[in-house]
Length: 290
Image (tube, rainbow, N blue to C red; front, side, top):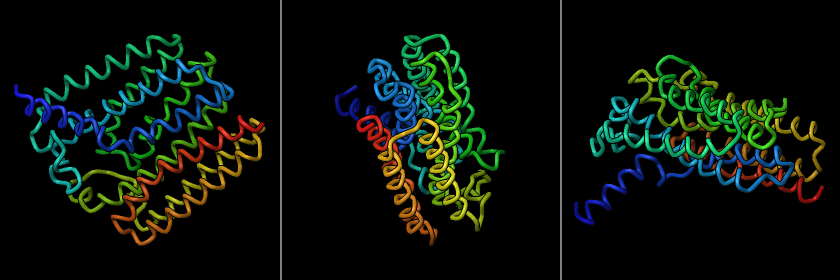
């Protein structure tokens, strides 16, 4: 294999794992960091943080490959996904399957450094990652399942740091599920016409003409649950100022999606990185000024 061929292959694997589009990693990373901050009372063990951050990258990469293996027959019929490496035959399903195994083994080696409770929860995380692509065949709200798959790192973070999962962790998980429904419905609005043609389920299809209303309701529920987290943990007023800033981001997203323009919807989806970051900075502000 020549250097040019090797470079092309690496680039192909990078696209397969979506490392060239890190938004998915960030949407998974932010709630993980929220949980680590709260579980560690503002000072989580940096070794555990490093393990989780690396694990997020590995599991998100594995999830993308698993999704493309499962959806390759559909992806070639969707404008946005028809050039993905498996759909256009740049990578075989066998190659992709080997890559998934390698990524999962690396993730397993990381989680094995944590306590037994966290290892047990990681089995659930693996199950959710493997089964999420299938939910789009039959479940009316696969975005809710995605929220669980992305949010399982929340109870894992509490288990890793404290060896137990307090009730507030489940409130945080619920907030993440609502947020995932909001941002992934924005994403699904881009593909709605193609999904209808090929028979894929999505929240954008399920909500129909109430899609924008449902998204804004989910943002409202997310912020309400995060407010409850702050109230329960007696957080500083700086935290609530941060949530107000996150609320303004959600309101801005309304201006992007209200006309259901595909570009606006996709930009709103991408903008959720800033929503997650703002919530994270709100937590940091609490622990700095308390």
